Length: 309
Length: 161
Image 1: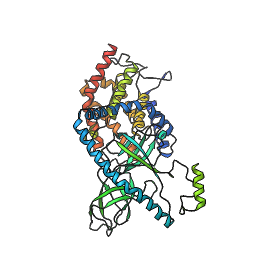
Image 2: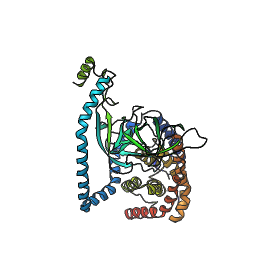
Image 3: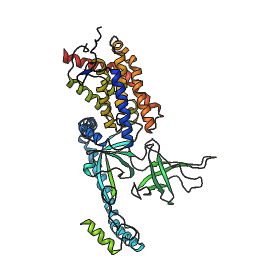
Image 4: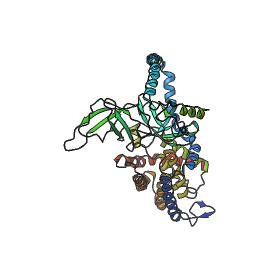
């Protein structure tokens, strides 16, 4: 077999550069880029542009799954009908509960006013579709079809019908990436609903387990306790269910309990998620005053009204 | 043989796009661990078969595409793929003389180098890397190589005649 002669390299800017020189340059540039990417956010415009350019490939890769879903729905009339029935029943139940909610909300507002505590903020909600789950099986990230163009911002919380799923970590103009609460690099401040005890639930890298590593041996916690978000850390809205304690074990000789909880959100099912944020969150400038401890003060009310106009 | 012929950039680009799609296809958990590295293998195939067109630089740019789609540290996969391409370039005279299934065996260290660079950078970046399953794609990529290489070669031959 004939080998190549002195010009057996690809052309670079009209010259043949040996692969040895190129690999050295590439390694140096890559390391510099990675450090830059790690230290600052300065590469995110480049990332954003490339991500938009690569959108077609992403969509094409999702297509087979979508087609199977669609055909499944198309052919399975019986399932559609039974789904429909179940959903209408659910709507009825939820509506019945909602009737009470309006009254409760008003009552809550009055009581809060009496206590002169911060007034509850309106929760904004945006529905997003899950585009893809990370192809890397060891990281729990999902990609959403809403990006900064739709008002998504880093830190926004993600919930589904059953509980908290995670938070947004990267945003490009057309899509966003979110970490799930089960990723091993993620922790969420929670409180035990029954007792109000505060702790942190860490991801384990398994999609059905969270760990509560900071509970002392005498902590009051039992299997089946509900953990709700405490809102500390100001990333997640308070009061949403996060997980249910699966088992509690006393480790002889250890100072902390070994507690495993199961997320209430259906992390690996479903295609839609809700992005929730309170009106005073990062994307919008916070009002100058008001929304503080005395929401009932006339001056701050005026400031709010002025801010709204 | 397509080594001495000029395969069009369009063909190379479209096989890369298909490889990328296969790498992105959503898979259920146990299968995702076994997914061969379709896209890197396609890039390395063209590095091997079109040395005048695809080299370290193109491999690096192709890797950055993965970084953007996976949101990994910028240029992580670029670096890994460039290193793998460099090894392929150094080994290519040897690789050309073997049939595809022997090529696959000879390429094992190349895929190991690729995964090792990723393992290293992930470790520095703070990802939990102590998962033996990380190394499974090496085996599946080596197994899929004969099939992948014959298909790509066939496509190339169809074009250049």
